[in-house]
Image 1 (cartoon, helix red, strand yellow):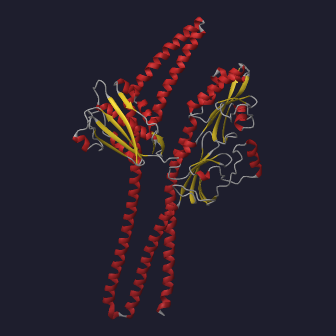
Image 2 (tube, helix red, strand yellow):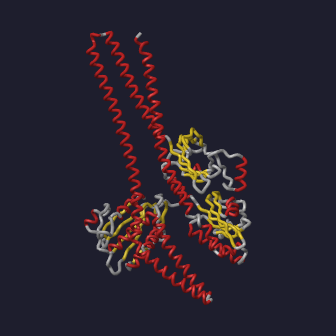
Image 3 (tube, helix red, strand yellow):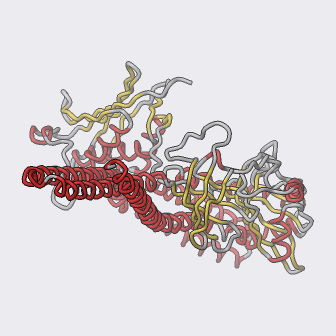
Length: 616
């Protein structure tokens, strides 16, 4: 009979434990999704801003061709073959300067009249592209935008088109093809997958390579036939991504499931399973930006909370059963009341202690995990910012020399332009043409100076690749050219016949070389003819570059604290003592090392050791 009387109470306890665990799981899941949603909105803002900024850099470029008389003369049928050659050369040079994939001009019928790739065997010149949507849109509205895959070379890109008009009306269309590959590479290192779909539901940009040119919704045969006509995707298969909706949460927010299809995609984050999908339409385009946040961590946290709630409910039920048994035993055994009371107190204390220990241990573990994750992210961000700050500090030191380098061409430009105006008034066309040629040479010179500075200042991707050391040293010397000439410094550099190729990041390596050569110049400040020696040696799969100055050398104190942060021998205000620290950290990331010592013949020598790139 006692066993049958306890059965209903046991069933009630099991039901209470199940309800407690289920309720805690649902509450924990809702709270986790709310946090994940807030993080996803922030990521949407960042990715949308980066995409708009990348496209905005080139939005004005097609319209500028309407200001080039040679382009308008070509479309108007004036100038003959010579006009076409001039426009081809102009577009080729403009394409190299702008960093675009291609630039070409179509006449009013949609035929390519001139192109930047006119030298290539697969040049666009002469092709009929009137079927392209961006041509028809530019003819009708004045501008056109289109994402597609080139029909000639098969390169995906974003097309920006603008109508070219003359006195007689629309003469043709200027088209700029821009690559968004660099933006995709930057997205591949983020914490959650991101993709961009066009108005047809086709994924055109994605942080996951396997998702690109898949569809978010099924395509009917009529739509596929239309794609074959416009050749927008160059007859790609356009397989479905396999997104299955699980439920809508809010406008633009829903839960989805992505199933695995084909070989497993290698990625830094999960690409299959349940995701929180957050989408937003990009202003000025029919595209949709989508961020997918995986729910694995939310589910794990909700399960942990559910387990804790179930354990707590089980403890309460156990306590209730014990109390019930206590009352029943009091009725049956009044003589053993004191002993039973003592046993009950001991059992209750143990249950409370174990429950408290379990809760405290779980909270401590969660806090430690969270702190480690935040510390690792903060350290990684601080390291990247410190490297970029080192670059900007070097640029600040170079600013005086660069300003002097630019002031001379600017003064010459002013004089030559004024002389050209006077010679033009006199009708002296030959002298005017000569002055304009000199102006173009000066502009090219200024472009090379600013281009080197821009390449040096840009943030590095951090990916190692084969780098020619002699070329990297030349780039560093070009950046320091003004300072070297101002100091009358002699650089003794001899590149081996078999040029060493190291495995590292070119941009960060140039930052290290600029810092080492700049320190050598600082060490020889005040000398009438300073000299810097650069020497290479290769052995055991590694290359060593020695940078030697002919200054006073390193003191004992400097050698003891050479790579410590904020240690510097320079006067106050001339440095923070972070240059060698940052350089040593960069070289360690490459798998190399940086050492400093005194040369036996005088002066200091810094040895940069890097792994050689594998022979192809």
